[in-house]
Image 1 (spheres, rainbow, N blue to C red):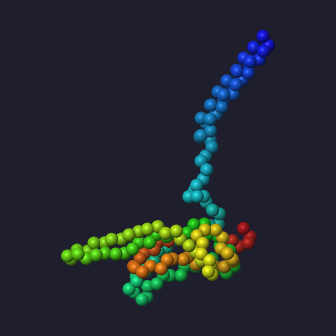
Image 2 (cartoon, one colour; image 1 turned 90 degrees about the vertical axis):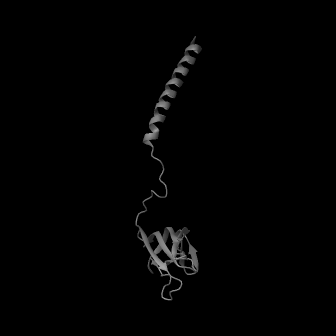
Image 3 (tube, one colour; image 1 turned 90 degrees about the horizontal axis):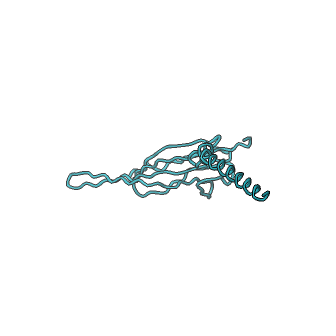
Length: 154
């Protein structure tokens, strides 16, 4: 009889534990938040630089600008760098102008010396430049770069 009572007690304990676990699992989804994504992260002391420019191939005065981040006393960490390029084109057919603007996403790069990279730390202390491809046609660039400058006290 002791063995029978012991088995019934074990089953009751198991049932109680199982019931509590099921009840808590329903609450856990509301209590435990989803892990943050890269888009949700707030990076302390980071800066975002956004801008745009247009390169007109036939115009000798239109060149890709030099965009510099940081200075000679900081070490730069690039968090994200990208740009979109929109090709400005049109055709004229029977006195009708048709625009064909094509936009594409480009993973951006920054450069320091002869080193190119898209995210992470610069190879050495000092400023870096945004790097853009050379285009042989008229193009508009919209760029975004998120970065952080390390000054040694952070």
